[in-house]
View 1 (cartoon, rainbow, N blue to C red):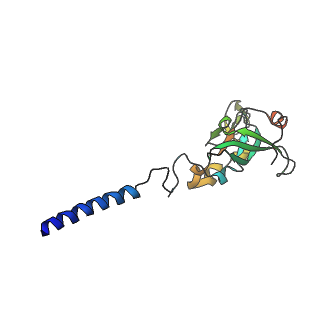
View 2 (tube, rainbow, N blue to C red):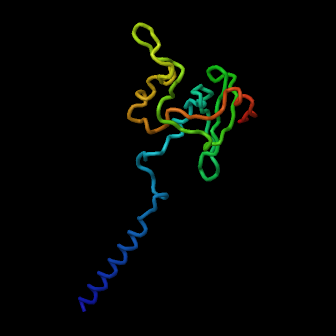
Length: 166
């Protein structure tokens, strides 16, 4: 008789522990994030990221991110023109139209010179002044955001787009 109660208790314990583990197991989408994952960016760090065109000319910077109802970034609001945020023209660009780049932008316009000032070639790539030191200043958190974005338009083309109104 004792063995019957013992067997019942053992079976009940197995069932309860099985149900408990089923309830505590969560899918990846339900679990809380505990650390940064490669390929994820902090939205707060994207604000202020410079935007260049294909000719490596700075055409603006990221001012805002607009999310759709599912939480995906739908548009990036770029600030174009102006001075220190005053007089900027805001335009909405679809997030997937921007190319996000981790390395500092390069300039094709600066030629390498020898110590005597002789031009060695006109196609050498040198880091632009705006990008100097940006990789080192980001240090260990370099993967929290890209260095810059690229959008294939000139500053004048962006200024001609309808202004995004907040």
